[in-house]
Image (spheres, rainbow, N blue to C red):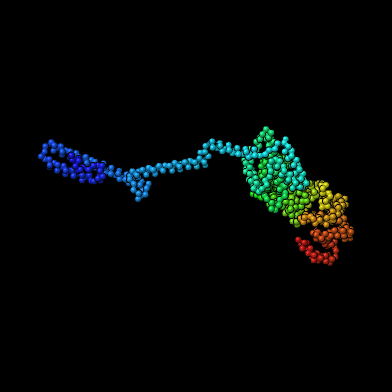
Amino acid sequence: MIYNCGIFPSFYDSDLEQNWNCLSMQLENYAHKVSFLFARENENSFSFSIKMLHILASKVKRRTPHNMIEKKYRSTINDAIRELKNIVSSPDEKLSKSGVLRSTLNYIYVLKQEKRKLQEEVYFENFVYSPIVRPCFIWSVNIFVIICFLTRLLVFGEPVVDADSSAWTYFLKLRKNACSCIKAGDYKGAERNLRECLKVLERPLPTTKYDEYVSVIWQVIRHILNSIWIGRCFSRIQRSASKTVPVVCRSHAQTAIVYHLLNQIYLTQLQEDCNELPGLNFALCAVNLAESAGCSSNGLSHALMADIYFNAALQMKLFFPSFIAYFIRRAKSHIKATEEGVKRKFMWLFHPLARNFLNCRLSLFEQLRGRSKLNFLKVFNSKPVERLLAVVKMKLLKSLVEELDSSSGVGISYFCEVSNLLLTICTIVSELDVTSFDGQGDEVCSWWTNAFICALYWREHKYGSAADHFAAVRRCPKKLLTEPISLALGHALCSRKLCIHDRDNIKFPRIVWFHSSLSIVRLRSLAVIDHDFHSNLIEFITVIRLLSLEWLLISVFDVWQTSLNYAKPYWQQLPEILTTYRSLAKKDEKCKHKVSINVYELVSRVLNGVNPINTWNDLEVFYQSNTVKLLTT
């Protein structure tokens, strides 16, 4: 009955926060009151009530610590719920505890979904960029697609003409006509025939600038594939039963030759404002098809491959100078695989003296166009390599002539280097038509080189070294036997050689007079030089004329000296020879050796006891004509 009187609060009411100590004290007071009210009742019932009150008080005391712990737990839970409310909603929003928990669950579900998406993105990135993570079947699919793409482009996209077809016969006929036009100098006709050849081979040239750009880009990509041997392997695959591997290689080789000829014609017909795209297209097409054909019996030779690479290097030198070294290295690797004769034909390109000439882009452009001021050649071939070879020979010959014309040499080592390179180049068998004094022919250039070498060795007083080249000078080419300049120098050289090496010969004076008279006749025919010649060519011939005159004057003076009788003065002996000698020396106004002749006269007058007053008068004449400056030097 006491339990329902409202004295004892329920542990589940909202007043759980009352002080349980106060409650226990109230219970004790209630117990005393009850004991006072029921003092007169039965002793047994009174004792029972007292016991019950004490039991209730003890239970209340035992539940007090447990309630404190529950209070602490509830406080912690309430704080956590408040924090969750601040996270999932705004602070002003009113939510019950169940609403806060429900919003928290929804927020957790959203976060889990976002986490799953981020994990999928990270996995996809690792899947794409990591070759280890990528599955093997993806690689297999990619390789299969690449193989199909390359097969379509390099196998079925490359036209191949069978050697037994009528198109092949027509192609050979057109190419033969093009070669005939090249030999005749009709480069326009040759280019027209070569373009028709490409149409027969189903390879028409691009007509618009856009097509040229696309073609050049594709050729660059194909060259990259060829450099790693993928393009070469695909290009040599058999197309059909009739188009076997040898047929494919032969077709590629002949097509490469056509592009190579077009590249050569383009190089020799350069203009100031020319477009570089056609030349680059020709060069890259020739290189790529040559690499596809390979070096074999059905392909191309190493020499032709080297020629193709070198012409491509020239094309790159004119428009993209930084890429010349790449093609030069490729050409050099093929040159090393050729026979010895072909090596000599190309190795001059890698000599330092020749390389200095080729490194100058402007000079190279002028020489290929055939309009250079240093160009002494009358006839050019369409092959750029042979054209450059002829120009290099002429530049080396000119350096030897300048060495002869200079008062002091640049050194015997440089002279030997130039002469050895020239003699090496002269051993190359040339396919060009040789004209006199153009430096193109083997015999012609060799003869001029040996003649200049003799002159330079004589100037250095190396008579033994000069004697080694006499045999080569005696074998004068037939083409030079009709040229006045070569005959004049040859006879003058023979006269000087007799004076130096054959003075003991009994017929020495007679032979010297014979060669001197022939040389004088040839020099007189060159007195009037055709003004149609180039100015540098006129200077070249003038130096050779002066060299011949010097040899003649010294030789005639030696012959005259050997005929003198030293018992009496020279002016009393052979007066007609002396008169001829003086007139010959003073006739040429440009002769720089008149000073030497005057010195000979003055010294001879002094030694022979001539009147010193007359000698002094002659010396004053020299001084007034500013020749004494030359005497002091």
